[in-house]
Image (cartoon, rainbow, N blue to C red; front, side, top):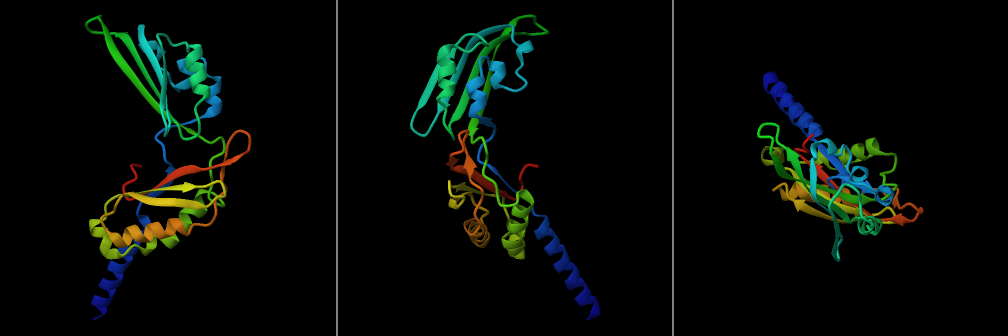
Amino acid sequence: MKKEIITSLLVLTVLSAFSQDLPFEIKGAYARPVRAEKLEKATTMSDLIDGYPSSWITEYVSTGIQIVSDEEVNQALSSSEQLTPEQVSLLKSAGLGDEVVIDIKYKSRNIITKNLDERILHYTATVIPEQEAEYPGGREPMKAYLQENAIRKIPNESFKELQQVIFLFTVDEHGQVINARITTTSSDPKTDTLLLEALNNMPKWKPAENRTGIKVTQDFELIVGNTGC
């Protein structure tokens, strides 16, 4: 009997530890951020792309910039690293949440054949606020909130089949979490509902601000499971 009790306690301890160690993160809903100030000051491709590989490029074929918003796509073309007046103007028109897409076609010397091979450099970034939204107290209190109100409450039986789950949500100009929704389900309705409720019941954040101090909205995502880290 004593052995069975000890075994049961060990199992519960392992399950509890697994629950607490389940990886999760909240981050901005973008792959690569860029601020408006950087776009406004740019005069060359090197100003836009960190670590720009100018040494690779023997000859430019074309350099294109697109600004993609919810309503439309605008673009301007050139044939060098130097931005044209049209490209400079286009970058200055980019708004929060817009995607900046850069496609550079160039020729590079093949070290084996010595020929000039044509290649493409593709780069995307999303325009983010100058001051991003912040959970009250910062990242550690945010992690503690999610652990207490979601991660530790995930039913133990759910872990066996648990898949990565991703939520999108918005922090509005008042700091409220709004429009929380599932983009990738965990395949367990209880887990999905638990996480969604935790997001919707979050305390107010410090809202994002643009360069002039005006409060603006910002999109985030919650990833639970394999976060890729």
